[in-house]
Length: 391
Image (cartoon, rainbow, N blue to C red):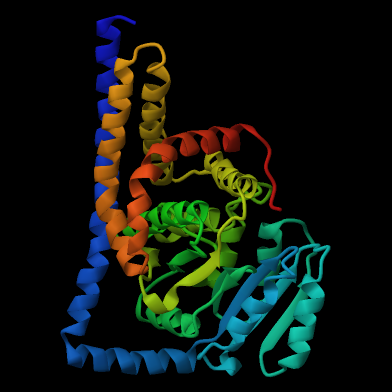
């Protein structure tokens, strides 16, 4: 490889690095604005009193339908249902619609038994008429009776004021969709710690991008939206045969039809939904490949551009590593760019780990930065060029 070719390659990769810096820098700025907004509210007692009145009014007027798609979650579903039963939100004001997507375990029986033992909670159990999570969520959406819809996953555990704080924020703002924080747990083994830290980076980018008015990610384990609007945009969706993305493609339609300001993120400790880490590498990569597979069907240019910037910058780092076997000097660039990426990522990761009370995980950030580019490139290409399915 000639010096001129190397020079051109380095210039191109520097452009990718600059774009990555701008992208993550913007998300970091957006994430930091949550703290400023919250501290500003805390300084005004009169404002707090107004919020309390608004909160009471929103609770009196708002009904909520919680939608859940479950397949083979017999070991997890009772924990989720119990956390819904423990909600501080009035049980008369919310319903739970659980669609069993052709489970072959005890998911339906466990849910039915819970319904019988807790008749004061409005729990509706449906058998899926279609196949896959998207069809199950759509079925639940059409069966919902309330104006607001909340969605979570069957293996999640919810904080007691989850519905309250989400409804309160949604009612005070002119929104179509509200996104919430998700925390993986537990974080005992090294594999689990790296999973949690990597996922926190996604949540940080989700929150930060929404805060600057260009939401590019969301998580179906914790979201709320307007039912009528969701039904209105459903007819424009062409993604129902794709295994993943029930959350992302709906968000795309909300942005397209109602603008990016119609989607916000609620960064509140009482809205943190917990879900399980993957038990092994096979399950982890299967999940991430499923997430990556939906990328080729995106239509929002901001979402596409963000995904490309992240992929190209990480691909550049992988390139340096591989090229080092032919020209060892590239290994120097590999290390330098990993350090550069670490410095770019550190501010946003510090903020989100502090908020989630997971700051001890930062000690594993540098090792993760060496692994992360290879993982991103592998899952991106395998997700784009191989067939995946939900469970």
